[in-house]
Structure formats: structure tokens, C-alpha cells
Image (cartoon, rainbow, N blue to C red; front, side, top):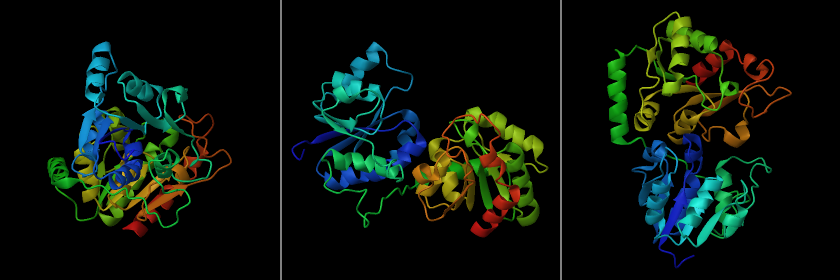
Length: 344
């Protein structure tokens, strides 16, 4: 491995997973400082890595699917690599590296792709009740890329730190200025969405009630964020709320979202990409968990507080709740408000 000068890493497709893979990327940078590290990722997460001084090059992976022309173009871009490390678990991630003629293909033996890999690892972190961060780190250890057994090394401290950068902060300030004059109180961002499904989303009426109470009692400046697909959700919350809210849902890029999270005093969020971005920027946050497991995918930050009611069926990891979403119904507005006040 030490003779290899060009190393390609296939990154993950989602914001949260990308943040959780940062410690493993930093370890590769530390272990192989003389190598040219290239990160193959989809365009919607690429700006997360720009300016972080972790990799030398970002190669865009076609986001609209791979036609034959895309396959051939990608093969030409990847032909220079001798080794590929696959953080993404998909079968296609391994197939692309084989098709591109990369002789050393390293990844987890999941999704029926074991025969496509030359060095394989088996997933262990979940069974050991460790954070997803260690999933990517353990791949390095199991396949000989690192001598350090991260799952058993008590002195190892994973580094997920991200900088929004001056550009991200500038874009965030422009959005905040356009949204209206600031209030006298703290800037609190609410992220009521979650791409995975409704079983990860606290209720709209409770987000609205929380926003009203924060405005009434501490004159908070409330900003809603989320994806374009979540604009209807934001409008629903505004319809229920008694006060006008600043809605930036669907208006942020990844870079400006990072800037907003670096600017705010607190984030209230479901288990989602923005939750992980806030954790990586040391932004105080209250994270509300329903169907998912905060041990595996919770915010990796000492400034985060998780509220999760461990009912008999949780964590179910389902997209939609087949019963009454009792894990969320037991998280009250009063409880979240008290957590916000304590964090502020």
C-alpha cells in the first residue's frame, strides 16, 4: 500500500453519512500524507469537503444515474488509480471500480458485492453499539489500511470538525438579511424535516407551538430550514404558528446552510443531515429522535442534547410508523422548550 501514490475514496451520498465519514478521511490523510487522495462523490455533498484540506481532489459522480457515456467517461477519470476505498456500501460503487480497472478494491462485503472486492471487511460497529463514525474507521483497520483498532482504542478521538468558511458565512448573512430584520433575542434555527420519512419527524403543530413560545418568552429570532421538498412542511408550520417565522426552507445551498448553522445560537432538529452539520461545527443543538438510534447516528458533539423516548418498539428504524408514533408523541413542547432554555 505504501507504494501507491493515487488513492480514490468513494464517498457516501448523504450529508449525515458524509459528516460521519470525516474521521476516516482524516485518518487516511494522516496515514498517507504523500499520496494524492481523490474523493468521488455526488455534487450535492461535494461542497462539504471543499476547503477542508482533507483530500487533494474531488471527482463528481453523475447524480442523474450512469448511462454508457457516463460509465466510459468515469472509467477514463479513474484509470489512474491503483486503489479504491469504498465508504459507500452500494453494489454499483464496487462495480464502477472493477469496470474502471482499479486493481485494489477495498470495502465492506455488503449488498452482494463481496466477489467484486479484493480486500473485504465485515460490519462490526453496530453490533458493538458504537457510533456510525466507527463504521468507516473500522474499515481502515480491518483491511490493513491502518494499524489502529479504533473500536478498542480508548485514546483515539474522532475528528468531525468542519469550517463553514468565509463564503458560507457570507451566503448565510445574505439570506438572513433578505429574510428580515433580526429580533432582540437569540437566533434559533428549526429543522422540522427529515428526508428518510415521517417516523423521523416531530410533529408540525409542536414545532409551531415551540416557535411561538420562544418568540413570546425570549424574543427569539426563529428561522426554518430544510430542502425544497420540505417547503410544504414549513408552510404548514407557519399556518399553525401565531407569529410570522423566517422561512429559508428550500433556499439554502449546502454551503449557506453550513454558514447559517455556524451563525445561529441553537438548532432544534430531527435526526437529519443538518443535525450532523451542526455537530461538526460545535453548534449547540437539541436533537429529537423517533424511529432511529441515537447511539449509532446521534449528533457527535458535547454541545448536543438528544431527546428520545425509548418506548417498547424503538428504535424501529422504519420510515413510516405503523401505529401511533408514540416515541414522538411523548416528547412535549414543554420538555423541548426547557431544553432550549437550558442550552441557551
